[in-house]
Each structure stands twice: as C-alpha cells, then as structure tokens.
Amino acid sequence: MPVTPLLPLMPLALLAALAAPLVAQTGDQIGTQTGDQNGNQGGSPKNIVVFISDGGGYNTHRAYELWRGGPMVYQGEGWDRYSVATHALRGGVRPTGPDPLIQDPKLAYDPAKAWDTTALEGESGGYPFHFAAYRWLRATAPDSANTASAIFTGVTTYKGAINIDGEGNPTRSAAEAASERGMSVGIVSSVPFSHATPACAGGAHVPKREMFVAIAHQMLSGGVCDVIAGGGHPKYDDNGVKRTEASYVFVGQEDWSELAGGTLAHPDGGTWTLVEDAERVRSLAEGSVPLPLMIVPRTGQTLQQQRSPREEARTTTPGAHEPVEGMPTLREMALAALNGVDDDPDGFFLMIEGGAVDWAMHDNQLGRMIEEMEDYHSTIEAVCEILDAGDRGYDWSNTLVIVTSDHDHLLLGPESDTDPFQPLKDNGPGKMPGYRWHSDSHSNTPVPLFVRGAGAERFAKIPTKPDVFIGGGRSFERPAYFHQAEIGKLMLGLLDGQAGADAEDSRQGEALLR
Image 1 (cartoon, rainbow, N blue to C red):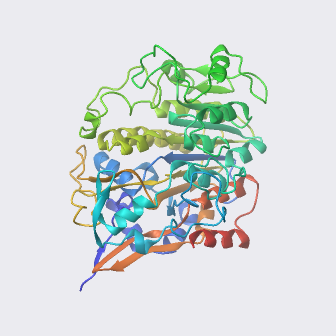
Image 2: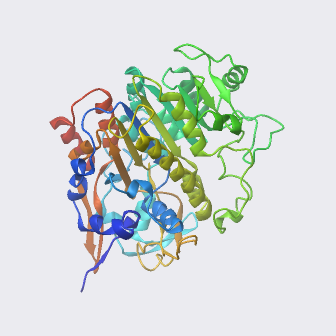
Image 3: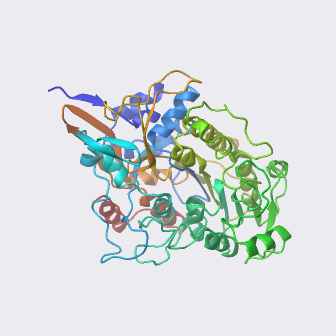
C-alpha cells in the first residue's frame, strides 16, 4: 500500500517561500539549521522578551495565516524554528502521589498514539472521537498552569500548578532570576493578570491556579514585577459596563482599594500607579513612565473576546461585532510596558501573552480567535520594529525574543472527521478557512517555537525526538521536538550567566523526552 506523505498541523511554517526549507528538514535538522546562519548572537542577552499565544497550536497560527494571506513576522528571515511538547508531569490537580516527581508515562507525548488513525466510536463533551489519536490527544491534554510553569521555571509539574513542582515545592522562575539580576520585569496579558500564564511569568507560587486573589497579591507584593498589565477589573464587566456590585475574583478587595487609592507599596520602594484609561495607556508608549505601573483596563476579563454577543460569535467572521469602545489593545499595553522597563541599565524581562486566543478557542469562535491573533501578531511586529531600529539602546544583538504557545487545541480541516488530521482549507485571504473543532478544550499536540536574537543559537543544542508516524498507508510528520521545560532551563541558564547547556542539562533534556 502506498504511503501518502502528509504534514498536518505543520503548514504555519510551510506557506509559500517558507515551505521548502522546513519540509526538507526533519529530525535534528530542524534544531540545528540556523544559529550563525540567521545571524543570532552568542553570549547572555541583556534583555529577554517572551511572547505566548495561549492555545496557539500549529493550526491556530495557520488559520490566522490563511486569513491574513501571508506569513507572520516570526516566520521570516533570522528566526529559528522548533517544535515543543507540552505534556504535564501528571494529571492530578494537587501535589500528591506515590512518586510526585516522576513523569506519568501515560501523559508523555507519544507519536504512535498521537497519530493513531484507528477509527473509534464514542464521544465526550458532545464531540465525537472519530479516531483513536483524537481521543488520546484530548484525554492527555495539559493546562495553561503546568505548561506556563514549565516554560518559565524549566520544571514539569502537574495540571493546575503555578510555579511549584510535583511535591509542592516552589520552583524559581525566569522573572525571579531576572529580578535578582537587577533587571526590570514586565507582564502583559489580554486576560486577567492573575490568570495562569501571567501568574507563572510573574513569579507567583501557588498549588492551584484558581487562587487568583493570592496570585494577584504575590505579583503586587513580591518585589519581582515592575509593570503588570491585564484584565480583571473588579468594577466592570466584559462589555466595559460598570457593575452594580464589584466582583473581587481576580484581585482581593484590600489590594484593589490600596491600588486604586495610590497607597499600595512596592517592596523596592514607591507605590503602584494604577492606569485604567485607554488614552492614558497609549500615552505611556513614549516619554516617562511611572514605576511601578499597574494597567487594568475597564473590563472584567478579556479586552475584547468575551464581549457580547458570545454565542453568535461561534459562526461569525472577524470584525462582525463592534469592539468594546475605550479599550486598549494588547499592542498598546505592551508598548507602554516596554517603555516602562527598557530604561533599566541592567536590562529587562518582558512577557506578553495573547491570552484570549485560548478563550476564543474554548468557545469555538474561529473569527474571534483570528481577531485575537491579529492583535497578538501586531504586538510582535511592533516590538520587532523597535529592535530593528535599534535606537532605544537595545537591538537583536543584545535581546532574545521567544515566540511560542503553552498548548494546542484540536482544530483541524473541514472533513477531518473522516480524513484524519486533514489540514485547514485555504479559501483565500480575508475569508474564513475551512475547519472543524474536535473539542472545546486543549490537546496534547506539540506547538511551534520561534526564537531570534542574543542566545537564540543555544536552542539548537537541546536534544530532540522525531515526531513521525507511519502506519495504515499514511505518513505523518512534524519537526523533531523537545519538551517546553527546556525553554525555561535555557532562560534560567542565560539569566544566571551560564555559558550554555552542559552535559547534565543535556541528560535532563533527554529524560524529559522519555
């Protein structure tokens, strides 16, 4: 039986002129092709910028790429490309178990199970299984807490954990390492600032991600963050309308009262300045910025994704519904945060999350997901333009930029219920691609990673495993992968001034793949 070569989920990096070089390289080649070739510099970077598209798997990027009609800035020249596994240490939601630090093999990414096209009856949550692979990818899916913890601490942990290991011990984050080094730290998100990804990036440590009030308090009082920006305003709803009664879900009432009153102290001196107005946010992109700075737009959760109508948005195109007026964009908040941290002579660490990409995918809103990806990509373009210009004291020679995702969603082509892993259908720029959702939650599929700048070549030293499956007359392949915890280990090594991954780091990397 002939073998049909397919590259499902890969196409985000395969469009047009970018297709050939990625398709031609497999296995370790994808992890060693660039480095000096892309002009990335050695040495420890002075600055690190991490972009995370929450829930942004290969086909999330591909859907936006098809709508956009061309590749994204991080698919261009100078960027190294990798693939990362996202599996959790185990599925429990608390630090317990007979071997709390041992990887549960049932959750570890396994290409043989991830590509299994055996037809399967049954369903869960209203979504049919169709194939054994779909069921396995859904059943073993990670969450944003364990994945973001891995990215920022280099330690795999259980679902729901915020920067603690399987035994409940705090794990040191990249933001904490940056702060210890004297660098300024900024955290930006399009969802509540105390949600999982910004919490992990901001150096919080709690056993359960739902402990929003405790997370917010740690971020505000821990002395790690200098700029925080995100949703979670207690006095406004998702349409920017003032509530009749405040809802202190994402920040405690006492912390908020002091923050709003201008009396909430920062451990390093001074008091937090709260900015809620969009025009004020935009003005902070230039000139002096009051530090420490807290930006909380007048929205309960997301900047735009949760606006009304939500149910109708499952079938509408991007821009079909008017945006909430008076709301800053992710790009505007990020530029304000960057301007706030980039004057530090010791450098800066900045995390920017397109968090509502994930929320749109949970709601199966392809149109709003594309809207969120547009704001996210525009933010990356803006930062890259500043680095290209190099007129603010930093550029690609001393700044490392990482673009990745925490986890995937099972979004595939329109006939993927009968044609396993069918790619999205390209209907042309400005048109919705052909698609099918296979879940309203996460998937255990690896996600893309793009890196550029100072220290980027060190990712090529990380051990990889092939993501290849041949069976039943079909062949499936993505680039060789390593676990996303390697991102955190590498960042910590750079921040701590290590020359690079030593033999022990390599052995640990190989162990994560087993």
